[in-house]
Amino acid sequence: DAKTTQPNSMESNEEEPVHLPCNHSTISGTDYIHWYRQLPSQGPEYVIHGLTSNVNNRMASLAIAEDRKSSTLILHRATLRDAAVYYCILSGPQGGSEKLVFGKGTKLTVNP
Amino acid sequence: EAGVAQSPRYKIIEKRQSVAFWCNPISGHATLYWYQQILGQGPKLLIQFQNNGVVDDSQLPKDRFSAERLKGVDSTLKIQPAKLEDSAVYLCASSSGTGWYYGYTFGSGTRLTVV
Image 1 (cartoon, each protein chain N blue to C red):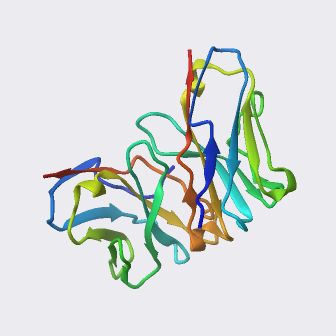
Image 2 (cartoon, chains in turn brown, purple):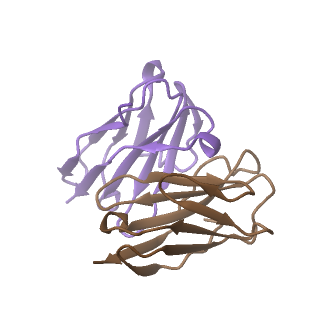
């Protein structure tokens, strides 16, 4: 019962930017948009999260649409180590959204 | 800081046997979660602890699965008896407070194969 929609897979070339989209048309006003990624044979790893404004950290940038019904995770220069499954998750303090509910995510392949 | 520790890393058992997994969260993290990840799917929450109390176990198959978190630190997840469909990776995660704000840190998981 994930509340987000992501493409099943995407491909990128090494050292090029990657834009991973996520649709969440039923987002509530208190839901944060979270991104986690899961490298092969590892547990999910936190990438970034935001509420309304765009966010940047050392790993990625998160661009949030003005109506908050969609967002995009931006990897500025993909490396082979960025090949992973990327999960977009809504979670917040209300309405049963307190826990992370994972969908199937987007499998990112990075070509050398 | 040290990450979330899980053991064993791999386990193979026969159906109807029992198995236990261990998790040591990040020091000071009050909230602990167990997730089950079947191949090709995203992780599914089984149980959430706040300190040593259960907050949510609505998705835990209680006829065969049990979990405890004594003293609010380490946690164990047990399956007895195991079924073939329990083959999955069992992930432990912890959070310093409300996970939706502070984020979760996951361990590398225990891969269980039931034959």
